Length: 162
Length: 395
Image (cartoon, each protein chain N blue to C red):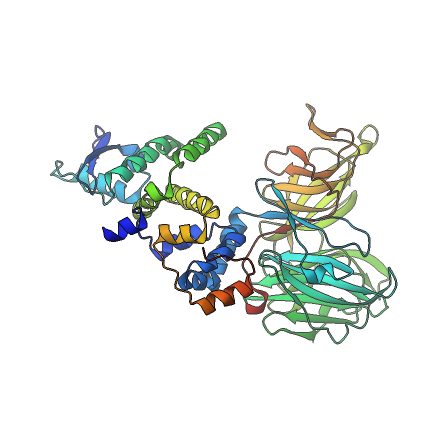
């Protein structure tokens, strides 16, 4: 790999170009493979496409760039503390808006840290949601018959289908 | 497009694998609420694989402390749960427990509590006792069938644990029948739902297994003095019970000079002991040292090659600490009944200031001490606990 390469260019699924530094790309195995491909291939002009939309990819790259120094060199406790606070701010997003896209992207890009963070954020948001709100964001229909609803209510008094 | 308009937003459809990874991070209370989302979700949340997945995640990431308020005989059970963020919540007693005179917790394992119900003729005189299993998170509760010997009030001790090898929870009960020697041992299997009597093995001719039990890695352990009839001498041992094989083994303690007392605990899923030892004369008279010894290998094997490793030695601690102690995440949790409050001093001794009661926590990695006071909770029993969806009827 040429030491002069510090960043690579990737395309989002919408066809927009994004730059990601080599050290940040190391947070994702698939990105890292792409990076090696790009750097070793004779045809360096080819720009790889990442199957993540632009809006989501901006956030994913932001996460990578922030976490790269720590992931590559380790960090002190105070850095870890600072990063934790940053993660909380970073994750202040609406589940309807982008969170599930981030989850899908983190899963696809094998980014364990971001995936765990997004799962926990989703779980924390869901704690405060009603059953019908949950159905909406997960695209689920209430398929219980009225008898089955009655039976569940008997087993779990106070449970709500709304 | 029409569908998105109906939904009002465009969250992507998540594969079940990702949905499961989100759901396993939810508390049991929310998951039970989400039974009502759909049949698929209900079946998913109730599936043994999800329950195991959720339990594993909770054990790794959300270990709690169960605080059992010290009470007089006959007082109702009073349990609280403290999570990793130090938030304390009351565990309501189910009607069955409220209606009973005396219930005592024996142990907590994978979210299930095992308790003894004592029925009294007159206060202090136990007429008979029976056992119950209870999952406080799902509020499921079950009284176990009586045993052949349950009419004999003089049972010695109980133990409760899980073995992944046989995927079963078992309860052990020993009887001394008013005599100091153990006469019988019975084991209850949650899988079969019944009791059976087992061989005494090395407990033959032994008595007085005291102290509370701990369970780790498929074994139940008791500490205490075994009184061997032939030798007429007291000797401290640890008794281990292999839950899968249903056999007892005696394990010698590590060399412990100057020990005031010791307590069984669990460290990284291995049996361990916490010891309190004296430092010496004045002005150290009021201080003790806490050591942590971990049994590394030889558990349950016939080789008797026990290997104890000292994992931790505390700085001098005030003498106002009292067992039982347990290990919670990276900290030793031990009751404090002192008149003082804790303070780290420059000389490395933990000082306790006036008028504070609660639990005293010593970090095994940093050797720093801190005090937590939980209103209304003094130096009662403390257990490691984890919230789970485990159903008592469906093991």
